[in-house]
Image (cartoon, rainbow, N blue to C red; front, top):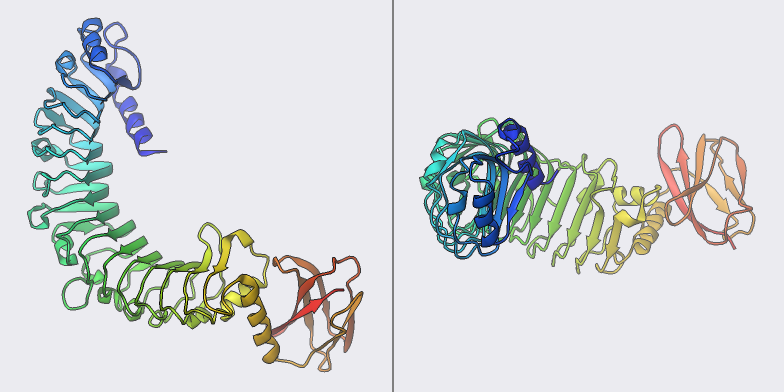
Length: 469
């Protein structure tokens, strides 16, 4: 459900009992897109005092005809460059003000103690926020973006909010304490240069859905007092952590017991991942990090299911991916692209993935250095590595073949024999413990395949490229 739909749904629930059809229109959302419509409303419904939702947009300047409306679920006012003054009205659920060029105050509004959403975006002259004093809980979302005269939140007093998004210039020293339940986004805040500012203002629930820092001046989460995750009170789990420009180091994460599922670092100046020594995410995204050479430091990546490594100019070593248990690209892909120095991509976890029935749409390997410039190049290297490091003596012939393939098993090991096409689809399976086994390949198209030979007892395996002519 979108944010707007959540806002309207809450308003319907709250105000259904207030509406009387003879006095007010029964629309869930009444939209005014011209001054004429507002003037006519005052004539048609002079005794209407309660409505579910009103949206006012497109160059409306006079709201006097709405003065009889004293109770609203949701008020949305957007893109009115000449609207200076609101009217006195109680708002029960949500307030949305965006793109109102001359609106300077919301002091005439009375906001409920329990709100659903408060969204104030791109109101260049808005400064009066006295009604926020009454708000104790925002159940869905607060967005404060690009309101140059709103740079502090001292009107909130011990507020609890599910999601908060801040963009613009803020003075964190003038914030009162906020308790965040779900997600916290700090975007484009020049004054934000240390996490201690945030800890002085925000406290967090045990679990967060998202914590993001984008285009701020937060260039250090170091271990010298700026920020330790362990100092964030009860916070133990974050589903998604995002850092984007210009973060330099992440020392505050070192030895932390906070669990993170999705960790993203974009456009940073970090040189290593030593400070992420205890993190074990399911998704890792490293994009456009010009100084990062390797994954060194992330000593445990056993939980990793997918990753994105793109446009990292000097990244040349991803060997730590060998600690991954099973790669499972899906909603999040395995994506290696645009890393000009990266050539050794035949690490065990990637080779294992390329020999399974993976979805080729979710695996992208392009535009890296030689041997890591395509899926086919990595597959060839994986096969070469395996052929050079056989764990048991098995001979396969003839290769190429036309019909049959012979496997010699001198040690009489119990073997699983699996044949895959180059898209990873298994096309044939047999098991044997015979000294010599003949596989019938009649009916398979003439092309290249992968034969995977697995010791059923130990799990040790070998793989060979076979060609049917």
